[in-house]
Every structure is written in C-alpha cells, then in structure tokens.
Amino acid sequence: MELTLSIAIGVLTGSGVWLLLRPRTYQVIIGLSLLSYAVNLFIFSMGRLRVGAAPVLGPDGLADPAGFADPVPQALVLTAIVIGFATTALFLVVLLAARGLTGSDHVDGRESR
Image (cartoon, rainbow, N blue to C red; front, side, top):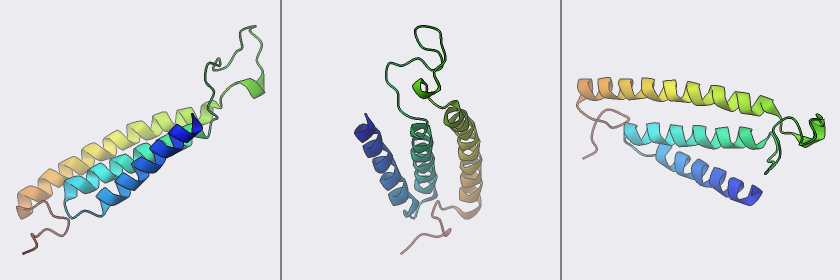
C-alpha cells in the first residue's frame, strides 16, 4: 500500500513539474493542479495508512490512540482541496482574460517563430 501511494505521489509530482515547464498557460494550470494533488496525497499519508481499521473507535467501542489515524491531516487535505479548486477556477478565468487580451495562450504572451 505504501509503495503504491509513493509511486502515485512521485508520478503526480513528476508530471506536474513537467507541465509547469511547458510554454502554454493551460498546461501550467494543469501542472499546478497535479502538484496540489500530490501534496494532498502526501499530507494525507502522514496520518498513517490504516487498512480495514475503524477511524476512531475499535470494534469493542474503546478508544486506543495507537489504533486510529490522525484526523488533522485529513482536515488539512479537505481544506486544501477546496482552496485548490477555487485557485484553479481563478487561474482559468485569468487564462481566458489573458488569452482574450493577447490573442495567445503562451506564458510570455507571444508565439515563438
């Protein structure tokens, strides 16, 4: 489970960095989104991966602090998802406005010849 999650975080990070280095603004926005997903997965994994375990209370109804996942990273990831969605929407509006003003979707505002 940890290996799969680590590979997923690595692939998202690598793809996000590669897209950030592209000359088109839409690719930069998608790269930022992929990086934010990678960071969210990383933060979520810091709360310990527990498969088949109860989130807070065990089957006997008693709370064992060593037996449940930390809820703080989960709350941080939920907040980051909302903020990331709003930021992506803002970037898309700025992208459309910049494309309307310059006529190009390149990062520097002009096509390379």
